[in-house]
Image (cartoon, rainbow, N blue to C red; front, side):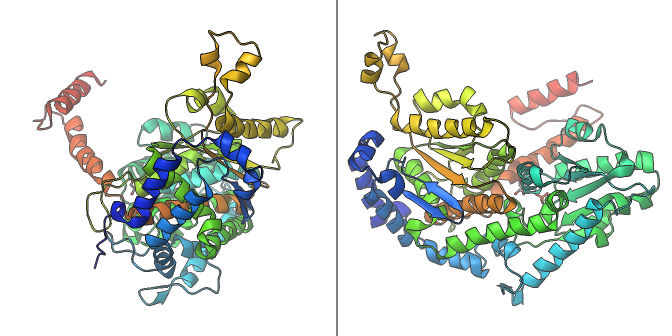
Length: 544
Ligand code: F6P
């Protein structure tokens, strides 16, 4: 039975926070730092190999205390336990939510429907390792006797963003003799460009789809089959050139992939939480099973921290609460994620699905319409590139945009002054955002009256700095799990179900209806709105 809740905004803890917000709304970071010389060290938590500095936020100790109280009142601890224990907390799909089981240690016990799922998780990891090692050692031989050199992952959403983000993030550790490509978009150019310089005789496709019904993925997979068979001719070749990652064995077999070459996972793994499952096969081939295990260990360390650390020292909880503070009290609409690490260039895109598909919800778990803001918009780009693009708006625009800066003390490529300069920039940006540059300082420097308003930085713009040692597989695991659990923290307080995604369905249904209208030989009778009808007619007329 679904739980019914008292409206969140009627909780005394919420009301107290509202009153507190009214009191501290005008607080200035300059003043907060001046009054407490130790603030920068005090409001920082070193944990799980991360230094999480949240001192440059518009908060006081009282704010943190009240936010923690809200999390407690919302039953965050019990909700998290229910997830870790494998209860069916994804109520609209009647599923457990156990991405944490994907990184559980071998001896652990996690029960779903009376069965310990951990041995099956490790059996799949072992099977993945066999394939990964074979490919990495040049022992996976294609149909014509040539070893596989190219791996093309075909998937979309969680079946693409996790793999491509992890590949890019961990490229430093990847097998350089292998080429990796990722195809997701149903736009044919995505496939065409990905394979244009590849030889089908040396190419292995991983068709990654939880459902194995997703239109984009199945269209790309069929195109891949045609592309491969144009050269390989023999349908028997499919066994050597296609493997599948899915929960749907029937559909995999129907597509023509031997289910012996299928890597399974389970309905309790959400698409956007699946990068530790067999969906990570391309990652494992790229970085090798040992590094993949290191990544899982990183995830596990953050899982344990989230499960056990007191809320005021708990990184995902703090991150989730700070996001909520701006989202619900300051009316901030977005959060910028700014990794000062080129390897993390796809991390913001990965986070967009993780955060926005999870908490972009308008009703609570019990179906009640929500009268407060839920998931913020996540976006970002690696620094320093973003600095020369959109940072202007963050510094001097009219919007409040909390930022997550992510940086590493040690570079993976030691080149002259590069890393010191990179780090100088990340520290400088957080400092500039927080403290700005006051009018008086400008005048002292002799800036003309005319330019003073333009050159003034008001500052007081909040950010978190997450400093880690080095971008290792384990560090990536920790970072991803940090965001996963911060999304969970927010979802639990907003009382939404972060694990379903009904909002993507309508568009899929309508596309299914429109596609035959576009392809019809004779003018179809259209019954859409006048705008959609006109667009369809225009497209039909103008396409080649
Ligand atoms: O966009 C909806 C969605 O279901 C995502 O949640 C999921 O990651 C993606 O589609 C791909 O789904 P599948 O892995 O089943 O192809």
